[in-house]
Image (cartoon, rainbow, N blue to C red; front, top):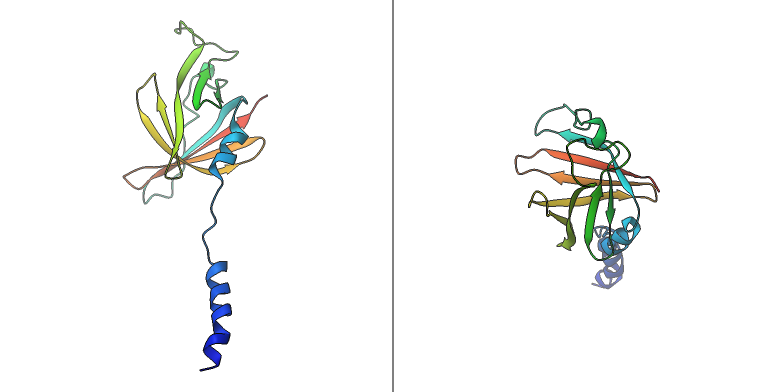
Length: 148
């Protein structure tokens, strides 16, 4: 019976080392705020398929340089940049709000009136990667690079 009390610290240490890593989402949000981010790559991975779809390849040239700024007021704006959309009457392509909901980055566009739920995959000083999971089982990875 003396061995059980000796094992308790080892068991506790084992459980503590298996703890799931948590991300500091507010810190990650601060890292992306007030900087210009341009969409650099979007790859789609359909459910049960070894195919990767590059969905940025089909975009118009005037869409490729658009940039997004996430503000500290939890609002974002996507701007038309150097190559302008010839049909647009404004340089604002999209805008909306974002927030955290159960560790998911939730974005609501005022242009399309749609909600999108993202997970942060990674954030560095120069790149953001979000993932978007579909109910069908597929997912997309959305990469932004910093331009300012």
